[in-house]
Image (cartoon, rainbow, N blue to C red; front, side):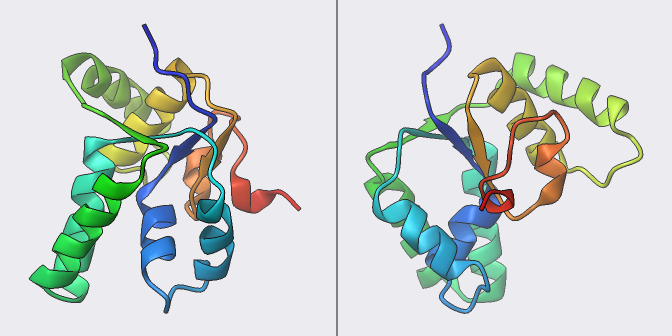
Length: 137
């Protein structure tokens, strides 16, 4: 049974929220202030942790993980063989795009969980027709 969530949260949205130097920080700070039910994946959490580790240091990477743990409206979906296989199919379908496996899993999860919006600064995540929150007025 699919988890019910209003929005799928991509790595770029979490980074923008956590990193004040990001140009989208004000937008995501406002959105995360009163979030609806949110969904992300373990791949997104791993990408975000790695980004803070490379860009800053271990402490900031651990702070990122603590932020994820503290987000009560956020459900983190584990990625298994079914999600990965569907994502690989999407990578083949959109082979003209520079999608990562994490992006493709996000597209799959967004569709299967019928989210209404995707919180991301990555316009590739709009490929399947689910609207990006930054594309709305």
